[in-house]
Image (tube, rainbow, N blue to C red; front, side, top):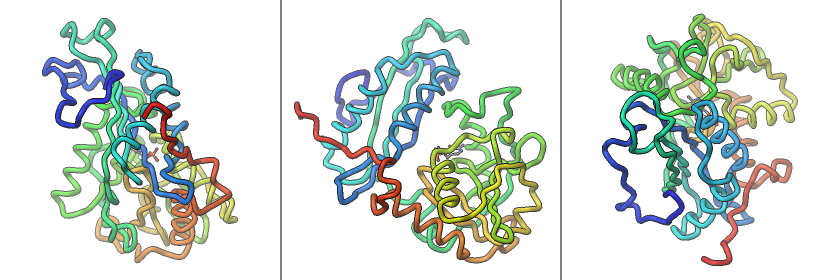
Length: 300
Ligand SMILES: Cc1ncc(COP(=O)(O)O)c(C=O)c1O
């Protein structure tokens, strides 16, 4: 935290932290997996690049270089003795002048790691989850910055998530401002019909998921055509298979949407999920370059 290793219970901020009041933070969600080459962070550099991009959207320079954050993350994982873990870097506006101009508030940084299982449950990954199309629309580019992974923006996901959970579903799918399918509360969406795979693109206000990009590449390598295009809400109900991708949820099939049965995870979902899982866990030579193997820092 701000350049020091801090014990979990001592990692604290002032109550007047700007980001707590106005959401002026940006963050990443990253995972490290146990592999034959040791603990390896999946697409670490891509996450750090997106962190820097999100910070820039909100007029913040990272207080540390991406390489410093990368090395500190390695050391943090080693110090905690984790073989696999979730990694949460956060860059935020700290305690300073109160008010909506944050430019004179300090920019602070932390990286936290902890062991975290499947976000939508192990059963969700094997059997699929039930999702509900949310009454909340995904934030649009006319009011916020959908491509930034910014703390305040997640109030949109929080509302959708609470609505879906209260209604008895595991996840929500948000439509964009035009009524097209956008994404889950923390995942991108893929729809399969007649062996064609489709996923919404940037014009649908998605967060450009790193796992989305990985799955598009993997599906292409497996010989499937992936169309990046607008996806109509009705295509969810008509789909042969639907799945979600995200760092927390990994690849999670959707078996039911709005009480309409899609069915148990289908063959294409399972094939891509297997190849994706192999990439995450370092079992695939083809995608070995996506892994940042955790090195023990020489001073640790
Ligand atoms: C709103 C939202 N969309 C999509 C994603 C998927 O992104 P990624 O695959 O980079 O984790 C996430 C998770 O970070 C998210 O929070």
